Image 1 (cartoon, rainbow, N blue to C red):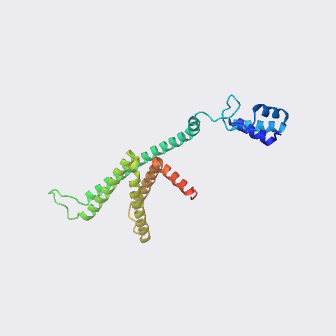
Image 2: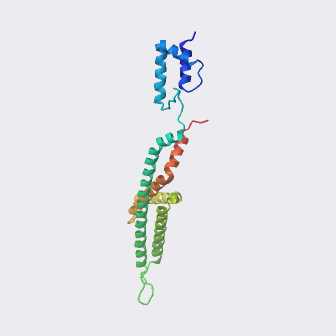
Image 3: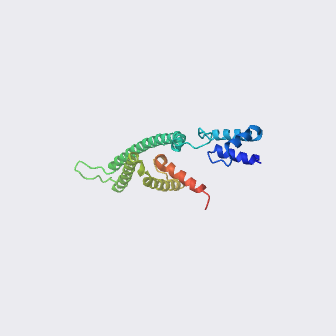
Length: 233
């Protein structure tokens, strides 16, 4: 005698498109007189439809012929949103890098002007006795550093993939300058423009970090987060 479990197993196999251990006539005859198995059959069919499988002509269940279109249709909107957000973020970061580079150039030109004033030359082409060549040399070196940093920022704005190496340098520079500022605050020897210079360097560092995140840092951080959350083998 056929019991309910055998019929339900045969129904599951038929819905899944697999070979059934019972003949279809036997299954249909049992369904006609068994409310319990009819309910199981209806629930199994409803589940197959919720799983979005295709119902073949013979009543079985089979996966779509090409799953790639279904998968791409599901992930493409999310991928487009992420890509668009990264492109907008990268454009803003590159604009900020250009602005920061211009500010560093302006600052360097001001330092060069100050250095020239420390080495006045008379009508005979002789340097004035009041000249301070040592301080002028320091100002020229400081201006050269600012011009170099501006050139690096312009290069990164043009080629964002180069941001990683310069980001380490700017981060180290800001760290040392911040330490010197703390020392000068304690000693009450803070120079004019020292705080503004540190603030400009910090904003430059933020723009570079933003560029790194928008270009490829997001992928690196997400991969690292997945590795941290992975279960050990």
